[in-house]
Length: 260
Length: 369
Image (cartoon, rainbow over all chains, first blue to last red; front, side, top):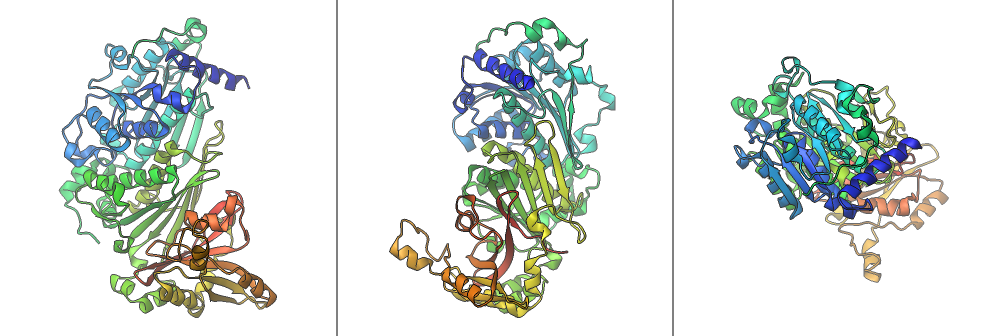
């Protein structure tokens, strides 16, 4: 089982980077995980991570809650319209699950802000509705060796997610570069069903957890698509000319663990 | 039924949902008219999934919710117009009932969707005779039953709750919004990382459901053909209220079905050994098993064991599972279990459950359309 062994090695490397030797439920409490985008996908992803035992989260979002968000961003109370999503998600999670170590960063992830925004995080769930942001996070994962991340997206009645780690292909192996925003459908045009976003966001978080814990997962190095027709998995091979094909990234030592 | 919502508010709040291909204002208003009852076994995943499902359905525009008071207030925060209750009796049709449970293979949710057109009026519900007669004639009761299985290869932990709850909400929301009809069975199989897949069995008289339990002809439908047969169970359930009633469903050599009532001896066991039998007849039942042997001696074949739930839905509870299959080993694998829901002294519904050897759990019987 060479594939299985590689995945386990990746997970162990991640644990060591955050100062832990043995992956366990107790260790999950200590692992700092970032959620980029606290909207329709970020809310169920955060809910899933906390249910799984995660206690250290970094919530990144510069947006405020609107009335049209509430049908799918179901942890926000009606009274919170106009308030910061990151702050309100932290409040909602702490109201349900007690004290958590949550850092809120009210900013939009760009090539300049990604490093300070995700500083100290061992893993990321990318949950924005911005395709460019997924590439920025992917590039940060590749540049900052040893991190694990999942990119999630949903629209209409379907969605998709892809988990990237050092020992798998990356988002650019599949899509090369962000699409032209003019041709990309968004929720404000094509609509989106709340429960579908909930399932996709949660699945993405579960995929990240599986990769971190060294368990095999369908979306690890593969794109999984969910639609009313079912689930479709597409394994992605590392592209020879991709940024992640660099031998120093693939086989070199882990980057030093930054302070949290 | 709730008063329809203001169209302007509908568009502002549910605009993104109304843009989905096939969705329209009438579906959104139908969701506003729906009541949903959220219940679960005692497992962490079941409890959390019920909450998740409630949040997503309320977010999508559900009008009335019946949920435990411990977390129901959060639903009201999400939608101040929501009509909230912790009493299942207030859930007048159309109503969706959810039962979330941890399973040896992962987790599951049973959904019963009672449409308004096929449901009794509020007046019928308050008059046992009229209601039970209508029910046995097939005019009322859970019109459509669906099961969603999340197959993980091991019992699900709490973190699977969001996927399960959201998928359950999606099944019902898509049906009420007229995007997709409620299927009979959905199995989301995540146990093989190289081949995750969803098996869906649509509802239809010609289609097999895929499950061993569902593939069998409906025993409840057979019982309903003669109203007098089920009337024994209905009358006994109402007479024993607020204690649980129980009994047997037997088939004679000629193939005819009969329902017999049996004494509920739970209280006697509770009095003798309250530690081993902490429940009273209010929330549990115990049959004298000699009656089963006696029926066999008389040439009667046991096909089902029935009991009632007082002021609770016709779901197969964790206690029912524990009694019928201690340590996951069914005492009578070939025997079905009929659960009768008695609310306020009147029969409010019933559901038949069969042992499913594949999933090693009890699955509700599919009702013919």
